[in-house]
Image (cartoon, rainbow, N blue to C red):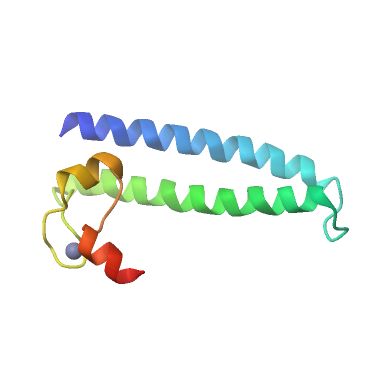
Length: 105
Ligand SMILES: [Zn+2]
């Protein structure tokens, strides 16, 4: 359990560092003028979308860390079944079992 926590804390740290880097890139690109088109703005939008997905990831990692403290970690929040250990190894911050995750798509 403690090693899973370390994995999550490491993942959170990395995700936050990536967000930080993107924030810098996004600030720079703002100088190029939004709405003028060209490849720069597409890269800027790509980075913006990337940041949004990283922020969502950071939120779910934080939620998983909270669950570890509350004792609900590794339990699917939809059906209440234990999440497969192999799934948790690949996606340590997931809150859904494979069946519920697939049902959502
Ligand atoms: Zn489930």
